Structures are given as structure tokens and as C-alpha cells.
Image 1 (cartoon, rainbow, N blue to C red):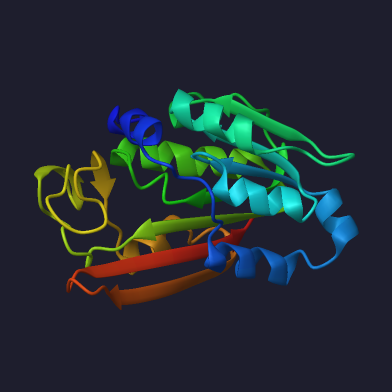
Image 2: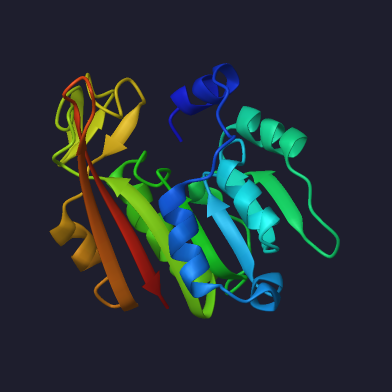
Length: 217
């Protein structure tokens, strides 16, 4: 994990609002409250717990890891499990995830895995598959190569830069920008692969390209 993330989590009031696209995707699959109560979900790079607040509110058994101690400390202050629920938060790097194989029914990555060199990205996606139970599902959301700032900063690998100078990843350490073809290749041997692309322009003229991937083991 790039050290910038501990600095950002220590300084910024992140962690209040869950992601709308993630909510829609998950709830279309997990409609039944009893199904959700029996579903163990892990968020990779959970930050201060914005998405975890949604999972707790909807009755999931909820786990979160982040490499930034400040993020986990804030999440522990803000989140509380309901009756019969699990809330397990821990400081873990992606390179050292300690859960047993097939521990989870659902794993979520909302703009966390992208912030790593390719070797860590590859290893983390492979670890996700190990951690998922049979018929488990994985949601990952990443930036695309058409983002403003892609291929700026110090290039360390193809489509991977250190501290892009503009755009959504500006000054946020290591950032890998994906192509659709790359994602299709990475998940080619998974089941029920769905990839959605979003392209948007903000008021300052900056472009963000985002890919959401929803797959099953």
C-alpha cells in the first residue's frame, strides 16, 4: 500500500456515504433479508466504512480490511453491528490477507485494488478467487485509461503511474488505469462476467472513465 493513503485517511473526513452503483448491483442479487443474513461480505480497502454501513444496515455479516490504520480506527468508531450480526474490521495489506480460503460469499473492491503495482493487482485478484465460496460473487470498480491524468506523473509500468498530475487520481500515489480488454482478459475464466463502463465529465472539464465488474466463481 502506498503511504499516501494513511496520510489521506488521517486528514480527510471520508466514510459517510455508500456508493449508489454498488448498492444497486448488490441489492438486485441479494433481495431476500434472510439470504443477506446468511451472507458473509468482505470489503477490500474499506476505508472509514462508507460501504460497510450499507452492508450492516441491510443485515449482511460484514468484514472489512484496509492497510491504513487511521481508516480502520474511524470505521470502528462509526460502525456498529446489529443483533446477530458480525462486524470484523482489521488492518491488513492486500499482500498479506489472512482469511481462510472460501470464507466469503461476496467480496467488494471499490477503488482500492487499482492503487497498486500490477504484481499486487494480479495477486489480489487471484486471492479474491481463493477467498470466495462456491458461487460467490465479486464486485470491483476501477479507473479507465481515458481518465484525465492517466499516463501522467512518473510512469512505473504500462498504464500505471506514481502520483498522476491531474484527474481523479491526482497526487494519490500509485494508480493503475484499466482498459476493457484488460478486464475481459483478467476475468475470462470466471462465471457470469458483467462489465459496465461509465464516462463522465465534471464542471472543470476533467474526464473520468470507470469500469464496474460483477462476476461469479
